[in-house]
Length: 204
Image (cartoon, rainbow, N blue to C red; front, top):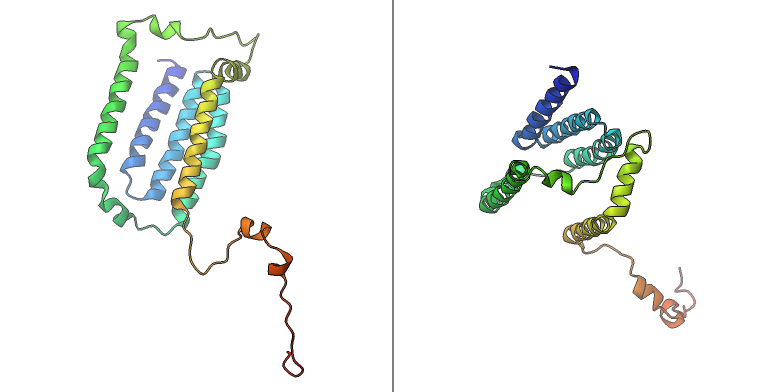
């Protein structure tokens, strides 16, 4: 067994084990830490395949921003996870259905080579030599030229999901002064200024 194969099996085993611990750990802080470990090992797998740009993006974006954000949110919010998990069994059938669909898709993708070995190569673009074009430039050509439409659609979906999350979690509390732009723009001198005649001896 070569050194590259040894590192591959090591990264793959740790990544799968830590991914399982993400959903098996009882403490949500431990789940986030196992998620960070999963990202590190996935970055190692990207490095073994020669995709160093994807490995650095995975570490900078997901480990440096997303996972750390999850960790701070979990640690700062006072959430009763026991009460939250009490109604999880109600959604078990839906979760099982989604899991079966994902498992079927994975089986179809992984088993497609057995039925049609040429299917994987027919839709792939030829990989240019590193002396002609770097991995980052080749990835940019594919992402922003061949699949620019799908890239924009994915960004739109994420934007809609972000706006939906803000709308669902926004709570207007009473007795709190908020800025109303329409009310400010519609103000006139008559409504903005009030002239009061104070009688002698009644002022402050």
